[in-house]
Image (cartoon, rainbow, N blue to C red):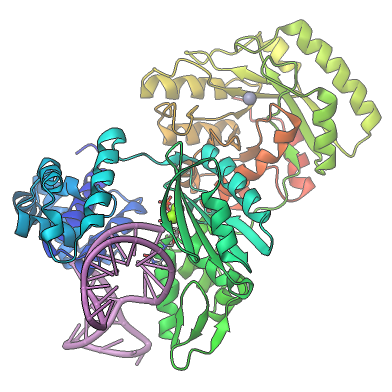
Length: 579
DNA sequence: GCCGTTTTCGGCCCGACTGTTTTCAGTCG
Ligand SMILES: Nc1nc2c(ncn2[C@H]2C[C@H](O)[C@@H](COP(=O)(O)OP(=O)(O)OP(=O)(O)O)O2)c(=O)[nH]1
Ligand SMILES: [Mg+2]
Ligand SMILES: [Mg+2]
Ligand SMILES: [Zn+2]
């Protein structure tokens, strides 16, 4: 089986979905068990195909029954229970659940009492106004379902929103909310705060005296297409582009509890709430309080709530229910990544797509307290790249600026080389050697196969001038897929040649991805955080790279350009291992 | 279906909003 993990995940998710229909209960504990088993499998790195039922059972959230189903799937390609459920609940039934506002109870009832077996059946029932005859349904239910059905027909189920789109949207909404008198705080939470590369929606938490005014301001924004729910504690809208936005408003003294709740993840919340219960307390979005009597223990800040639960504050990027609570308890969370003190991927107007002068970029780097800045405009092999003369002219300017700067900030005259389809690089070896810093990255030929892509990058790494590979996968989140790579081979080559790998903080890229970085954790590869700025205002994108590394549980020691200047300067001066 | 120095049986996170209902069920976050 090509990808055992993927197959197991699909099986467990389907079991969860079908069981929910089977039991007609959204809160079914069996469903939750399947879902948490899927979550457990997701974070498994071991090869499932090689694991026995006994070994599988050792994984938390997987018991005897699920372990046997996994083995059954991997050994025979089929799972009896799943086949049985598929018989009872065909795909046309499952499709009904895609409709907003229609859950397992309603599906069960529609099927039993009106014989609805498909979206088409439902359409008929709605057109004939048969639904309102059912207990618990009325004219409004018909109207809402009709609309939801029409939207599903039109756009299908809308996909997730890339973080590069969601973040500016969140900031616009937050800015508007902060204008409302009596508003004390507004910030994004949910998967966006956890720095997920795509988000299902935008979640915004607000502390305010006048909740009604906040909600009114939100639903009145021009970007609003429609209002899903409208309450003073919670309001949801959908933007014209189709992204949902959830807003929660609480009182100032409840902000910590609300941020904690709304940042999630759901699994993280549930684990914290279980932990509270074990201490005789209860946790909700307003406070951590005593079960008996309701005396509030903590609510103002996240840190206070974690502390009361016996835990250090956990960075949002780690709150994925991936063992972070257990690690926090043991004091085994990854170390915090220090201040970034250098950038090694920055463009100026010398690149066709650069929009800031060398002077502006350098001034910004200085203001940020950087110790090293590599200017890395595009080489001639890239569409927006330049030839030798322009590079030499830029070098003169950089040398002159260095003389004026003194030694507080070291400027490196660098270049972003293009990696050709066979790993070939720009200019010639002699000219490349004349640069202080070369990074190399893929900008085209995305269609090559896995072996070809791997080979071209490994070849580039073997060039004695290449110190770093930029945006390894060349993906655009929500757009261009990543090139196919044998990551293990890439990491081995990086270790052997001493070539660093970039964590590119441009939001549409976030490359290396969290997924690739997690695979890299066990390897001795040097990582470098960069902004890939094309404007001096974009130097702060390196903070995105920090979040991405954090989310992947990267050990700060692996990162060359955050923390102490000694480490950074040593890496900068280091001659790479000869190949 | 999973899990256990509080349990091997009986729990499993907790609440807002809507539409239906005369007190709550369903869906969603
Ligand atoms: N305690 C609890 N919290 C929940 C539950 N569902 C959602 N939350 C909290 C945690 C989530 O991170 C937060 C926002 O919910 P979302 O559905 O928007 O999920 P999230 O932003 O994590 O992921 P997304 O990218 O939007 O799919 O609300 C739940 O069932 N129980
Ligand atoms: Mg969300
Ligand atoms: Mg949400
Ligand atoms: Zn670049």
